[in-house]
Every structure is written in C-alpha cells, then in structure tokens.
Amino acid sequence: MTDKDDKYPQPPDGTMTFWRHLEELRGHLIRSAIAVFVFAIAAFIAKDFLFTQVILAPKEPYFLTNRAFCWLSEQLSIPALCINAEPVKLINIELAGQFTTHVVVSLIVGIIISIPYIVWEIWRFIRPGLRPREQANSRGAVLVISGLFLTGILFAYFLIVPLSINFLGSYQVSGLVENQIALRSFITTVTTITFAAGILFELPVFVFFLSKVGILTPAIMRKQRKIAFVLIIALAALITPPDIFSQIMVGLPLFLLYEISIRISQRIHDKEALET
Image (cartoon, rainbow, N blue to C red; front, top):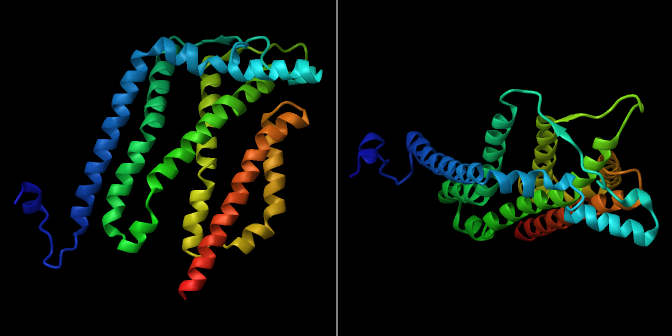
C-alpha cells in the first residue's frame, strides 16, 4: 500500500472517495501545469523567432495572407483588398512593458501548445467515471477537441488577425488624429482574437454535449439558423475591411461550423430515438 492509499483509503466496493478524486485531479493539474511551464520556457528562449516571425508577422507586408490579398487585389482590380501594405508601427510606453509582454506571450504560447496534452489529462481524469459504452462513443475526443481548437487558432492567425490589424490599425475618426499603437494593445488584440476563434471552433463539441443532455435539439438550431446567420455576418463585418469578399472569407467557415453542429445534434437525436 502506498502512502496515498493510507491517507485516502479506497472503499470496499471499489469506488473512489471524494478526497481520492481530489488527489487524482491534483496530479492531472500538476502535470498539465508542468507541460505549460516547459513550453513557456521554450517560447521565452526563442524570443526572436516568436515575436519577429510569429506574433508581429501579421502586420508586415511580407506575411503570407497580406501578400495573397494584395495579389488578389491586383487580379480583381479592387484596391481595398490589399491589406497591410504599410506595416503598423508599434510603440512601448512602459519601462518594463517589453519584458512583461515577453513573459505574458511566452505563457500564452505555452498554453496553446499544451492544449492537446491538457485535454488528454482531463480525459484521463473523467474516463474512469464513464460507462464502457460512453468510453467507446468518446474515442477520438481528445483529437477532435484539440484539432478544432488549433484549427480555430490558425484560422484566426492567418485570416482574422491580418484583416483586423488592417482595419483597426488604419481606422481614423479624423485625419487630425494619428494612430500610435502600444505594443501591449496590439498583443492583447491578437491573443484575444486567436483564443476567441479557438473557443468558437469548439462549437460542434459544445453542441454534442448540450444535445446529449437534451438542452439543444436540431429543431431549435434550425429555427435559430437565421439569427445565427445574422450574428455571423455582423461579426465578420466588424473585424474585416468594408468589402463583401473579406466578410465572406471570414463568415463562411463559421456558418459551415454551425451547419455541421446541426448535423451532429441530429445524429445524436436520431440515435437516442432508436434506443428508446
């Protein structure tokens, strides 16, 4: 018997006590925190690559998305499509601003890279409480959840972030007001957009669980499709330049996610109807 077993004895029926569950959860959280810390240290060390080639790259003309949009603007003779032709200039107005930004960004990158491992640790914690059939139905959950989140991050990084930088960085209420964008403001905008997109791309997962517990049904989602469409268009219009092409580029993947979620809810509804 280990020291942990002596401290939190297991009941004769094989179930785990509340304190044993807490002890198990603590282990999973500690391992997840270690993974975040290790990747954050690696990101901190790779400062030049992290900032020059990744974080700050979307504001530069050489960035892949910016070059693609500018090439497209030439082919279609639509000048408004060319984005970030002039790089946004950033300033730092705090003594420790660049250092604290370095630390915060390294931590955020550590979390993003660790997401698959964190999801796997969460899955390991909840798996013993699932029935064999539920475990079988949940196969691939770690891969799906991690894949959707990282896909959302990449979608935001390569599409939404450059469009947002172009629109917000060049927007002026008056020609008398010059934009001088602080480094922290830029980093906050980029990280907020990417994380929001990562969570938004988890919509099929949320719909799956809400449908399983009976909160969502395919009928409700179909009924609210028009409202969802309007919200998606409004979101796309908010973060893109004022042209229909950019709005479609952003809005179409989000609307496809909503349609996929309806199919997922329908499949769960049909499966439960057959079992009853």
